[in-house]
Image 1: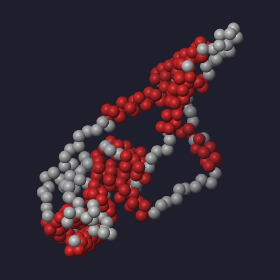
Image 2 (image 1 turned 30 degrees about the vertical axis):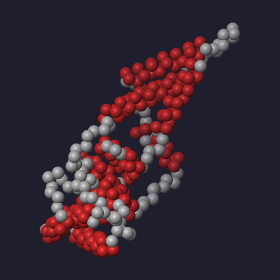
Image 3 (image 1 turned 135 degrees about the vertical axis):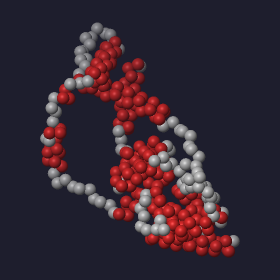
Image 4 (image 1 turned 60 degrees about the horizontal axis):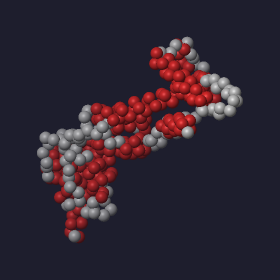
Length: 315
């Protein structure tokens, strides 16, 4: 029947509204789902409270500066890990929640000064449309009532039904607006070649020894952040030389990590995640401890070379 289909559509719309208002995914899940720069920025705005304010500002600044969104997205786990190491903080407790709520609601900010009683043209138009649809629904119910001579009761439209219709219209209007904005703004765009990788477009390829020499020079000048980058790149070049995973200058550090850990030629028991996380904090997050960072990466590089040479001799 037409009425059944109409009521079913209204119920479905309200259920969709309730689902849409459900719990939000956390920052880690949002980043896993983010496939564009705009989605990464939206995830940071919606779930940035999971990060330290300084870290959130750093990530947003990197995104606004034109850095490849993949590098920003893939560096979020390192920031979350850093926050976890610092320790969890327990939430405050309110001894009398009901009394505290009454106190807040009695403050001047929650008092109606009378300004809200004047509706703007959009609200009035929406209200009139809701009344018209409610009236149409009432007439439809009357038309389908049994015609056996019995008196049809008055189905007066109350304010509750009108408000319900207005809410439904608002949900449908907002859903349509979000749909068209998503198709227009979040459509896949061409990715610029060479953007967001570990090397700039005009930066030459270097051997591992050349990266090590550059690291030595930078350390002598006190530029430990830049030296860490050279040592990290030296590790990637050595892994390429030993056929563990090819060094791709256009890929991010986290993309290299995934391919390295998936390689069958990776030395047994050796992992690259700790070095990648530390590099991400030093280079992208600018969390620099000085010579301690350079010493850590140089030790890591030497351990990697020992493992690669041992594996090569055993082959």
